[in-house]
Length: 108
Image (cartoon, rainbow, N blue to C red; front, side, top):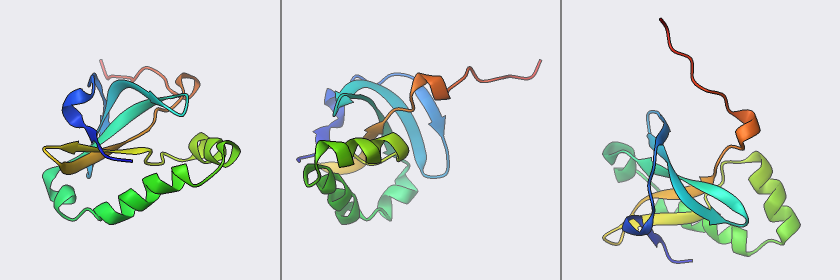
């Protein structure tokens, strides 16, 4: 599967961020699931093994629906690569189902 153009995504709220990058809403769906975009920061992106990500995405095409659904039920598995001007910047992965999320708490 060819990478999805980042500009084609309807990027929304940032859901979280960490050492490697940030996770954003996309409004996209694949395999019947809502997808989020893991966008890498420049440092981790420079060290990214793009071939390994390609291989992970490719495994989704090589397994049956039952195996794929089992994998997507338990892993934040890369389902499609995302690119900007032809360079991979991150990937789409399943969103965490609503029943496993809660509003964030803030201190008074």
